[in-house]
Structure formats: C-alpha cells, structure tokens
Amino acid sequence: MSEKGGLKSLENGVLAKDLCVACGACASLCPYLRSTDGRIVKLHDCDLTEGRCFDYCPRTEVDVAKLHQAVFGRDRRDLDIGSTRRVVGARAIDLELRNRGQTGGVVSTLVSLALEEGSVQAAILTERRADLLPRGRIVRDSREVVTLAGSGYVAGPTLEALNGGSFENEDRIAVVGLPCQITALAKMRVSALDRRTPIDQVVLTIGLFCTWALSYGPFVDFLRKRVGRAEVGKMDITPPPERLLLVTTDSETSRIPLDEIRPFVRSGCDVCLDMTAELADLSVGTVEGRCGWNTVIVRTRAGEEILSRAEAVGAIETESLAEDYLGHLREASRLKKYRALKALEGKGYTDGGYLRLPNRLKRRIMSCGDEGP
Image 1 (spheres, rainbow, N blue to C red):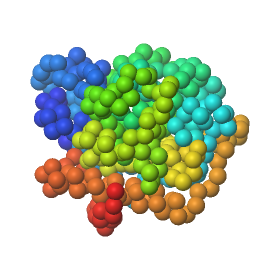
Image 2 (image 1 turned 120 degrees about the vertical axis):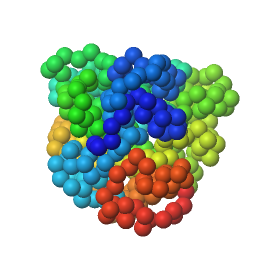
Image 3 (image 1 turned 135 degrees about the vertical axis):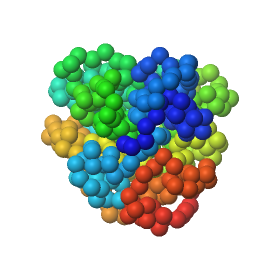
Image 4 (image 1 turned 90 degrees about the horizontal axis):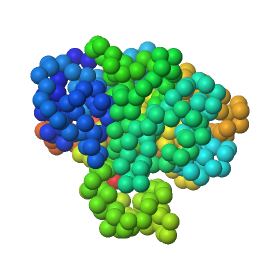
C-alpha cells in the first residue's frame, strides 16, 4: 500500500470522521489505543509517522487490486463477488450446531472440525457477553465453538484477540470475521512494517456476509427499552419482504422493524465496499428463501480443503444453488459497492476516498444505479 501514516493520521482520517468500524485491528498493538464499549479510543498522542494502527486499518487506503493479487495470486475475475472456486448451499448435519448457529450452522461446524482434526490449534471467534458487548476470544477446544455461535449484529473488536493473544510458534490459527476484519487481515499480510501480530500463523479465514453492523452503546440503550433487562438469547433478521430483527429472550421474541434500528448503523459501514468478505478463504451467508441453509463461497485451496473434508466426514451437506439466486447475490453485492461510493461522495470524497479501484471495477459498480432498499 502506498499511503503511510501513524496515529495522528488515523485519528484525523478515520476516528474523527466517524469511519471507524471497531474491527480491533489497531487494538493491543501499542499503549495508545484501546477498545472500550464498542469504540476505539485514543489514550495518548503518538508521534510516529508510520504505524501499524494506520497500516492495518480497513478504512485507510485499500487498494482493491493489490490486495486481491496478494491474497489470490491473480487478478480479480468476478467483479461482483470476487474470486470463487464454487458457490454452494450448505447446512450442518449436527442439529445442535444448526440450531445454535446462525442460519445453517456451517461456520461453527467448519471451525469445530478444524480444531478437532488439528488443522488449526486456535480459532479467533466473537463472543457476545451478557451485556451484549462483543469481543474477540481465542478458542482451542472444539466444544467451546457452539457456545459462541450466532450473530449479535453489533460491531466488535474481534481482531484484538489476535493482536494481543498468546500463541505458540507452531500454532495454526483460524479467524472468523466480518468483511472489514478480513480486509484488515489482508492488510496485515502485505504490510511492510515489522510483524507484531501472528498474521503469518493464520491459515484459514472465514468471512461472514455483512451489509452493516450496529454501534454498541446506542443500540443497546434502544434494545433495553424494548426488551427490558431480560437476557438476550439469539438475534436474527428475517428475509424480505418482512425485514425484521427478531430478538429472543427467555420469555418472548420481540419483532423489531429494521427501520427502527437503522439509526444505530455505524457510519463506517456506509462506505464499505464488501458485502461477501471477498478476501477470505471461505465466505458464508444466508440463502434467501431457504430457511436453515447457508450460502458458502469457496475462494481458495484452504477453503476448499476444509469444506470438502466436512462433506467427506458427513459434518455438512451441500447442494447447488439456483442461477437466479446467484444472480440476486451478485446484484446485491454490486449494489452494496455502488452505495459505498455514493456515500463517500456524500461525505465529500470525489476521488473514492480510502478506496483504490481498478477502472473496470469502478465502471461495473457505477453501471448499477440505486435500485431500491
């Protein structure tokens, strides 16, 4: 990446402009930054002109073509959803993993299998505490994975666990994260600065489809007014046309229209280009119209190996996806990109802001137009 900067540049260009997505890539790298209550806060000034905090951030310069070349070793082929080997529908065979997990339980199944069989010795997952505050957690026992299953839709500093964790030199690590976190991992890999994270030990990345994440404080304040102090067990979003956030507690399931929570979406999510975690080994989301199934995009050999192994041992089942669904997936991904560029324009960035896009990708995006919610 060509743009360089330190904490001052990060503060002025990202934190002060409300573009931070609280991914955790800058946390636990130095004494000057800390994650607290879903935010990254600066504790002290730092005079370094080049810093890992700036270099790793997914809201400082992202050269899409260079990162893609670094991860996949080739130019981008699919302009809409990135490089793919295959795209399938999948779900866990284990009913507990399927029911406790988000949608089809595929992510929990793959991580559990990787830990059980020793292809990884540690996994970085996101833990949602009783107060709903998410944080990264290092998991070494496959039996723990199911306890962390499910999404809370709140942005959290998952990558802080990678930066600040204790690992053996021989540990191979899997990371499950949102697209912004997967981008940060790719930036760690290509950074010219001295390594202070075990990024070279990360052998498997699983990216989660994402269109936005919520700011912790404002959303939790809102949620407590709706469900009181009851412990939240699971949250899920219904597909169109319903578009509701389902919040399940011990006593009831609250149905909250998405329009009511949109004010709590992080501003940094508005300028995100990536819906399907295009730099991951595997990308996983829902299958619209198929309850209990995940969409799985296999992007790399590492992704293919773990998915094929899960199929071979009967941990998951897969099926082909209809062409019209794949068309809708590409359209939704392209629309996310279009809206990101328009949001950057709305913030005064006429040159694409932090994004460096190849011309053919930019032309493809801008041909989309805003086609609806």
